[in-house]
Length: 612
Image (cartoon, rainbow, N blue to C red; front, side, top):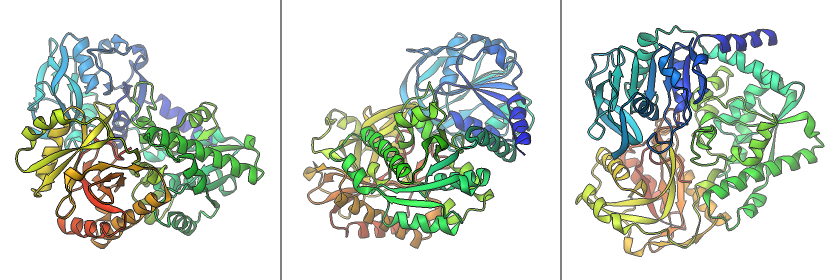
């Protein structure tokens, strides 16, 4: 079986494929994923790969990235444009192609993040089968303003005159938008057209073949050792646990669930019961909440919190090794890391660090470099992980759970020394122009992490107050605000009954304490209960509940952040029915210590899933 699996790896490595040049896009792996879903093999290459190594590829896709061709040029082999095979540039790749072939790229007059409507010239192979107007997903700073010789403009938006270009003689295409994300409604069709109509590729990839190759890879890496897996109880770690046990055998995989004090209410007990029901009883639970709380005492900076939590996980794991008299030389550390964790942590040399995931702190990276960490899901996305879980026979209770971050509520409980961030009163006039008379904007005195143009942003938040005008209008306003107002990457709606008095707004001193965490646990529990009661749990991909050390006269502020997504690299905020929202808010405000409730109406990008 192992010999057959190694043959599968060799076959996958040698087979014909689409070549993806990785310029650091947050969505780069979505390109590979989308092509795999079409049943075609795809392989990722560094930007400076020798063009000769690509001459047998069906075609080349140049990914997006956080850099600017105007200010900083990454190394690449210009020979890729002389191979005589089709090339598709996406976002940065679109700009790179234009710049290299003699066009002009300039900083965009209007930045674009999120949904946009594009007018297409669809009499070409790339847009075959699409309407003349389509919804696409944008995330860019710069824009192509003049196309190279031989190209024609085949798509434009209100703010981007060269949203798509083509040289059909050489089969060169450039798109400023991202067809690889599901928010570009015709994106799959565009990639399908490129892969099959333009590149003339053939189907040669399947999940079954991938799993065979993955099995061989894990067996080769682990050898005769055993795996000590950190199990949070979420989808990723549960599937990783089951997959490793299937490949290596139950006696060689040991699960450790660490209660870090940042779990949801009664979470650890629920994790143990659900995993035991699924047959995974080789699991030990350790309560290390006091150790974690002590480690982050007085810490405010979100990146520092994440790194401390990651290091503390390792410290607890090592302590458990000693208690069990395990020889570290005979074991590897297992993690349920999936691809978004690595890409948002700056996991490729060209990508920007959006936020450091706890499983990507320096100590873990050092262990990875030494071959001491096994991560069976590291190249996959959440929906693909769930597919594997179904193949392994895991219960839907485990597989359909809302994703929950490793640091847990620690990154949903924002902290502050009580000193407000610099105000942005200078943008109030511009905000008012965008918003009109329906809403009153207030800049909140705190910051939140975002992703704009494939780069990390850390910006302030604007609160809107006024009469509810419908989610469609709020979506439009949110997109305009974050696109056109510098220094803002997140918009929230005040849904407190009667609305808060902005004049009483005060940023309070607040840290990670048992008291604040318990307040957040109660609010989170209410959210789950109400969503389940109204039967909309499965409509929501994830539902972070955030506690802000922000007071409007009494108590702190809770932010509701439900959203819709498929792969979490892009997301829309969830338009919750008013009846559900009102009941949820009423119950949350009954929790002692909570005085206001906001609703996050920002898409991703420009805002990330979590606030920290």
